[in-house]
Image 1 (cartoon, helix red, strand yellow):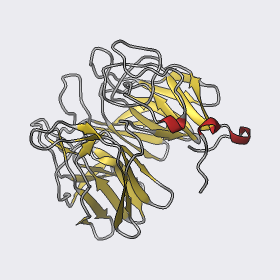
Image 2 (cartoon, one colour):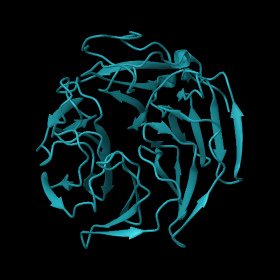
Image 3 (cartoon, rainbow, N blue to C red):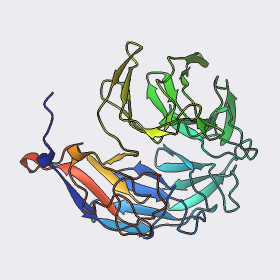
Length: 339
């Protein structure tokens, strides 16, 4: 496969966010991007719900969530957005579950979680949401797996995962046939190496080869061949060693159950959101660096100590709140392609 050159890509600045925030959640429904909750510059969870329409390049403020929250887990069920857990105004985990109907423009309270949780990972399988793990009010990780039935508005308990954790990557979860893959996560702020798979048909868990190293804030993406790719991140030090950025890229092939290790790719902490065949970055904090192969960012700061009107990538390593949104697309032959 030919590798495109850097000059085939460029950045374009889009409409600014209504306000800068971090720890918000992005979701896509019907070609529209929604931004839910998050923390403002004072660290307060907010109830905001904003809609971005690529056709008119405009943000629209919608009906706010009944419960202000940050770091919520979000699942799309048809034309509705299910918002689960997160952190509330008192900085404690939430058990509240709410649903936004994108056609009616209204919120409805739904059956709450069995206990208040933050850092929940969530995915959708056969029209039902699967929520796994999380951290309780006692700051301990959970192994719970819950399934939400939209029609009945009930949460059902499924077999717990082998390794308790919160903030698991993947984003939970990659659905492949009837399997859900879950990797990484944290236990009491320390990363875990566990990589596990849940079979929705047999309702059983399988432990897969552990991750090569303990790391956080890495990029996670599934390629078209069904391989899990882990890019960079902050690698935890052992003993008296300090944590360091890693340049490693690890690939797990779900078809063969094998793992390949590469190095020398990127040295950056980031999260990505692909929307309308483009790489979209909005809000959040500024990161330390950006992969040179993607070209310079419109506002190429390496760090910042006060709120700015731009972002590099949506990351989590500085306290900079940015109300701008940018996206990158290929300009080869004047056609937009996914990057």
